[in-house]
Length: 147
Image (cartoon, rainbow, N blue to C red):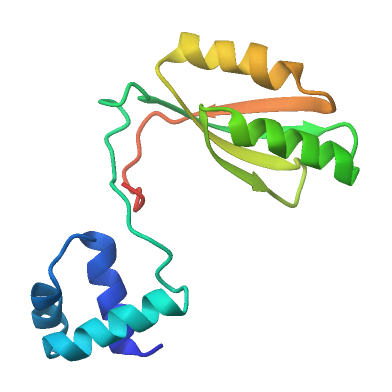
């Protein structure tokens, strides 16, 4: 991957619906050379896909929290059970197995505090092996490149 590929990726991350002709202009390539590079980035898995970026507030998910979760058992079975539960939990948009004091870091998007409390009590609080839950409520996101 060279500087031109990185520039292509930067442009596509800003606007995944940009036309190939516009993209080629922005990165100073011919349309055919630009298309070949994009296709190669897709083929090699550098570009994994394209998606719509939504407004969480308008989607009814304006309450955002990062949640650290500790497990009382560190077995593979305990981790797999927890990960399966988080996979189907609609409020959990990210689940990361992390190193440090806690085993997991979750990004949770809910409608409001009451909805989050329900998730905390009825989903997280009922999971076997969960021994610690710490919630960090997002008040503002001055930088969020996913949005």
